[in-house]
Amino acid sequence: METFSELSLNEAEFKPLEDDDGGRHEDPPPEDCWDFSVAVAGGPGVGKTVLIQALLGFNENGQNSRAAFLHPTKPDGPLLYLHPSHPGLTFWELPLNDGSPEKWISEADLLLLVTDAQFTQAHVDLTLSAISQAKRLCLVRTKVDCDMHTLKRRMKEEYSRVEMLSALRTVVLQPFNNLAKKEALPLFLMSGFEPYKLDAPLLKAKIEKTSRELGRALCLAQQGYEVIGYEEIAELQSALERGGISEMVRFIQSSLDSLLDTRFDLALMGGNPGFRHSILNSFRGLKDGEDGSAHGGNPENPIEYGSLKYPKASLWDLPGMESLESQPKKYLESVHMNRYDFTLLFLTPWQEASSSYQSLVIELKKEGKKNVFIQDCEDDEMPPGPREDEVFVLSPAKLPGPELHRLLGYLEKNLSSHKLRAFMLSLPNLSAEVIEKKKEALSQEVWKVALLSSLVASVPVPGVAIACDLSLLTARLDTYRQELGLDGDSLANLSHKSGVPVPKLMLEIQSPAGKGVTRELVQKMLGSATGIGLEVAGVFLHKFPLLGPLATGGIAFHASYLVLSRCLEVMAEDAQRVLSRAQSPA
Image (cartoon, rainbow, N blue to C red; front, side, top):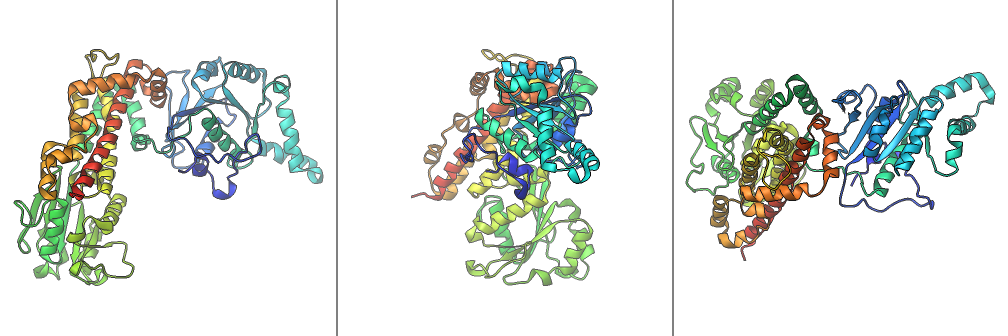
């Protein structure tokens, strides 16, 4: 797993921090990952923002430099900085006046005291307060390059960079001389114009090392967080400030509706009709010749085959273009090409993509349409040698196979997240990889459903000290169960195709939610989720300061999020076991 330092540093400039015994820490991070918060306190204009952006790997004028923070909902609240690549890490920018940092020290895991000149008595007092609370602390002196430039200009040939940096460390630490005899106070010198140099690598390593020592190792892959975009967070904040909770609920519901109502239309055209229909049927979970399957020759008009798994997705069998081969634009108009999100252009065996459909592909590009080539694999023999990135060799007898997974990877890179979600949920459980991608697709909505549930609920759950919309949570969990193929109809279809009796498939479903979702089960899980304590729920309040005034709402969000994400995870594991059992009927 990548480390926080490696995400923000070039390999050449990264220098791991050594342990006290001089050896490097090589222990792997623990499996359980937690949120880790860093409070950055300093006076106005000392460079706190530049420092935080450097620690997060942003350039001062970079694309994400402005979008990465959330304004506080209260005048004395912190300015929060988040980063999608390591969502467990939160920076709070705090002013050094009116005792503001004092209010937040107890909430932080690590405190950075920042100045661009000499530390004052206010810094010393805050340090004493942090030490009394057993908080980890680092001192940071910014804009050191300005001091070095001035000294070099004045001292000329007598200037020594190494000696001046050493002298600066001594001078900067003078206010802490008495305290330094009892407590080790690490000092980091930072550049203003080049914030990634000087002690920046060591400070990043120190943050990571501290998180490990506190048992709160930075987690880089917490499911769900990475799908919360900066723009959506900012829009949530704006909705709350514009119209309160009701406006925020409307925004979340609209955003969720947009996700759930996204259509996906896939066009299939060209090549051998029998082969094309076999691929189309496989994508719908049908065998050739089954009721409702595609068959026959090229159709005269586009024929829609709705997904059997997802009502918002359709596959379209398009007519041949022989009669209009010299008029690609007219052909595209005749098949209503604007309707489709993606096109699979089929090739006969050993047909070269580069010499086929040339005029058609040119016309598709003019209209901004995306397509790939699907090559018919004759006699189930894959042609040797490398293939073009947009050519995929498929055989119905070898589905799913590595070529299908390569195709899915290509679609993942070339479709919007909403369109990709609709396509993945339209597929049957062809492989373990498909199930994993379905889980990832469903995870996009988890935080929205959790937040909506916690805000719209008006009746508390009996026995649970939070208010959640039980109907909403129950309905979405039941949908996850169907999407992952754990419901009765899906198991019956799988049994029919595999020959494995339904009771034997059901034995592979181990999670309570996978066996069936009821209001009573959801209520019980919510009670268990809140039992892990307010400390973890508090982390969610810090991540979503817009919930700050709504303490119970924040706790409800945490509980709902935990129930949804955990159930999605275990149901995906159930689906993997069911598929494995179906593929080995003996």
